[in-house]
Length: 315
Image 1 (cartoon, rainbow, N blue to C red):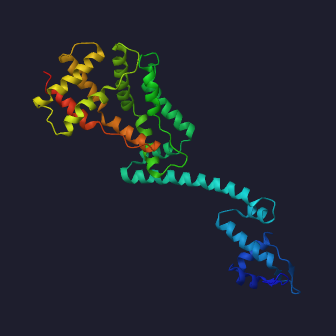
Image 2 (image 1 turned 90 degrees about the horizontal axis):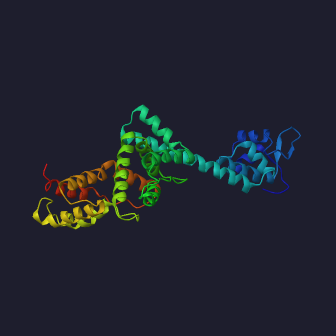
Image 3 (image 1 turned 120 degrees about the horizontal axis):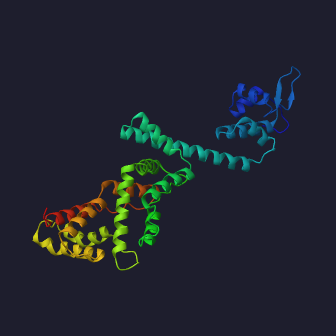
């Protein structure tokens, strides 16, 4: 195209690849106005019109609306500012679409009822503040009233380690994990189970002879029984006697009471509570949401330890 040459709308269409109808549409709205008119009244355009049309086509493909495009081509708005605003708007749309995709995927995989689907959708749409309030309510129900307990310093760390933080741009797996985790946190039975486990820890700490937070009993049992489990040792085998004696003696010292039948029953019940599959599921979902490594499963070693205790404890 020559800088001094004027072109008809048909010629402009052939050179830009746009239809005559589209160019006329943009022309009527003042986005690409004609440079002149022929004696017969037909629109004529110069080389600048072709450049404007190329820009308009690009901006339309990027999703900008016509009023905004007109301000850009007329230099009433800077293109970088418009691009930044639309990039942010697209980011919001992408987050919404990811949420919707995650909910639909979960519905498909879980065979959810309409009521469950509605709940999942509402949970996925919660704002960051709403998510924090929901989890805060759960953590208050679990840890509330234990601030003055000797184990309070340890609880502060546990609370942080049990708090999900869904990122601004979660992937589908993180959204699905968040929805399931939120559902669990609202379950009264799950709350009660976690509360009992926390209270057990508080009691153990209160009966110990120090205010320094002690290591979790499940972790201690894991370290003592884990090697036996790894070798395939039968929990009922006489070879397991010293292992069981070691962790029951540790628990007896922790509570300041004798290592007797009642203590072993108490320890077995304690480990069974810790071994609740819902607790492990929560921790696995939490790791997905927060982008942490998957936690080690304590279920095998706790199963072994409980069985080893039961076979050595008279009913």
